[in-house]
Length: 165
Image (cartoon, rainbow, N blue to C red; front, side, top):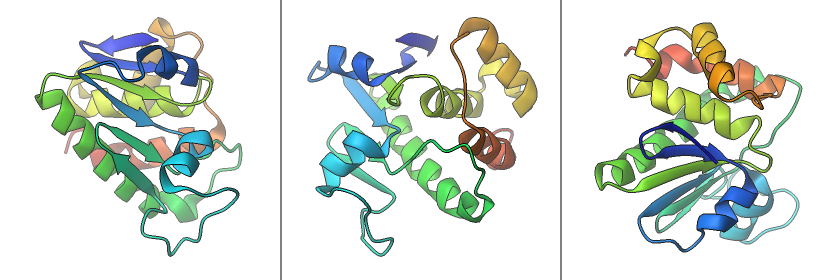
């Protein structure tokens, strides 16, 4: 687990299990398996018409239906933008309450650090610089950052929707 800025951490599924059920933590699970599947109660694929298709919140935890793919899917940009807006509102709610926040994915290499970077950049970390410079800064402090192409291109395309608005 790595602290990006005060009380906002990125990490892996293993990091989540270390803080699970610890008071004053809020968790954003950036992975379909196992968390979105567990929260919603399904295996395999979920109908896009399901009300919890994008995400599911249970108390101080939220699970995103976010898979890590190499192939960039621009058709999902609007879907992801809306999902990230809801997720960031959830994180803002708990940040304002003084909670520590863990943003994690399965390995802590791709989805969580990319979304964590977007979230803290939105808050003013990295001085509101552009996507490429933020990636360079993240890699300097978090060398295990190895994003898959889809999450990388998605956040690059959506950067101006969240940072410097």
